[in-house]
Length: 414
Ligand SMILES: Cc1cc2nc3c(=O)[nH]c(=O)nc-3n(C[C@H](O)[C@H](O)[C@H](O)COP(=O)(O)OP(=O)(O)OC[C@H]3O[C@@H](n4cnc5c(N)ncnc54)[C@H](O)[C@@H]3O)c2cc1C
Image 1: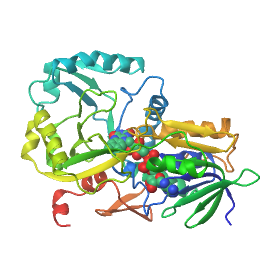
Image 2 (image 1 turned 120 degrees about the vertical axis):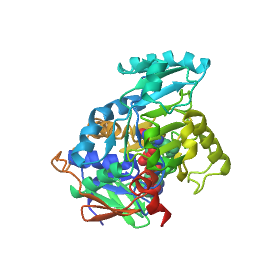
Image 3 (image 1 turned 60 degrees about the vertical axis):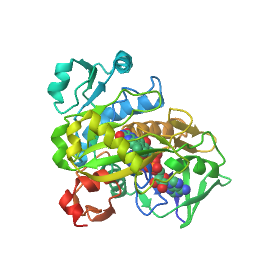
Image 4 (image 1 turned 45 degrees about the horizontal axis):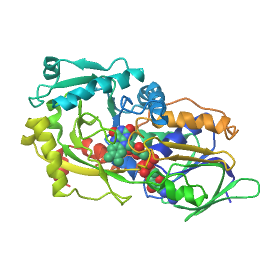
């Protein structure tokens, strides 16, 4: 049997990969267990790749605190690792008088969250910045710090770096049972054996409630919410200069027209309640039409370009808006659940909070010395679904990465 790890992390999405990255750098001996054959295979493989600033996150929420904390760290970390990002900013556009009336409220919320750089644009400023936008906008806001990153390379590089520091990362390893022995050490049973750890972190995303149940704790239920997208080729990149946001509602950020870090224009995501925790392979014609319509009325020139790809992702939503960051102190079990629509934007903030919980709530000191050095990752894409990080091969699971790294001609020949 293996020795006892400081921390066993269940789930290799962006949340789990960020935990293994941060905790290993702090000196904790970590084991990450992922049931799928590849890391970043579920919710984290179907997102928009946007680094949100949190301007519309609820004030006082864990979500906002983690996004703001992540904002302070993530760009220097991406820079050190040599990962791509683009600070393209976002333009929120109102198209009628009711929407226009909501902008002061959005602006107030942003200011209350100390985002003083959110600005109102005049209509002439708007059309100067976004000349391909449809006529008829009634008002607009400029949110300069919204950015886009590679949503696959980022978490994969985090896990890869943790491995280089000694963390163990196992894929195709499904956690099936969790129990504590008489000394409080967790025995995590998987289809590849039993692993032991002082603390367990549940970052199982869409199965967060199922994994909590294995430990006999249950505070929330996952209510999956599907989001679907259309992807255009890079020839459309000059049609927008920033992410074009609609006015958010209580429930959704709405359908966005944005540019990936590789310059593909993308329309999405939709917001659909679903019973299924997995994502459909194809979009329905009705969804395609709805998204095409959204593109047509907002950026009409998009109509003359073909859609080169479509994809979907399912959010691990719950019946409450905020994240479920729940340390079960008497059990040495930490739930990171319901991180539904901003998990990429908050990833290092959540991990920072977890580092503090390890010390302050679980009184767990790291076994090793910290190692904060962050060398550039040597990355090469060998074909449309494979990348080498150093000498290790990884399967690319996110459509933003694999459509972005290869042009349409390459796609047509597949
Ligand atoms: C449509 C959409 C758009 C989004 N857009 C953005 C965006 O632009 N910006 C942003 O910041 N966020 C965005 N998000 C949110 C972000 O993607 C999520 O917050 C994030 O992916 C959640 O990550 P996770 O690691 O908790 O979950 P997941 O990615 O689902 O990872 C959990 C992992 O746990 C594994 N697992 C489950 N059960 C077990 C088990 N028993 N044993 C072992 N492994 C297990 C799963 O296989 C999975 O790989 C979006 C999400 C969606 C779906």
